[in-house]
Image 1 (spheres, rainbow, N blue to C red):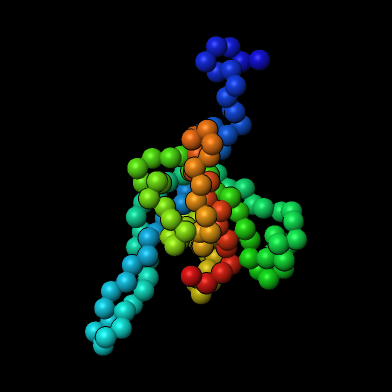
Image 2 (image 1 turned 90 degrees about the vertical axis):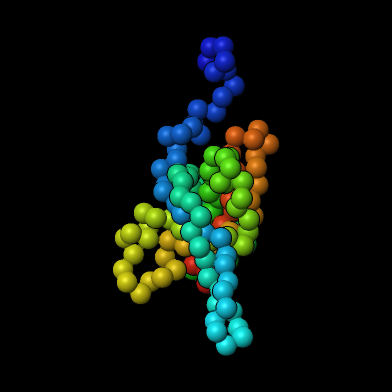
Amino acid sequence: RLPGPLQGLDLMSGAGSLRWHIALSAPRSEPDGSGGRIRGFEERFRTWAEFRWLRGGETVQAARLVGKQPAVIRVRPNSNTHQITPDWLLRDLREEAATPAGQSLRGQYNIRSVVLTEDRRWIEITAESGVAT
């Protein structure tokens, strides 16, 4: 049992669990010079995160069969992370550094939802790898 102010804290989800370095990018578009627009992403910030890959359920299993891997990524709430929306792109910088040229989707995650946990200690990002942006 933990003493005083430490009582009731979830020590398994502390700063030590933030082992993945990630980059978060917001969508942007600019004119292409011929009346259309070029769409892409602009990196806004980098931070440390915790990854939890989803494994159960029929939907998760079906996604994995077609090369998609759903995950819940946890980050600390701050002025940067409160900006994240489902149209942003998340990149795992460790995976990206190890990716051979030509495998552009590896290490990229499309964000599906962004939720502040009930205790307000984390922002949980549900994302999926292996899908085009």
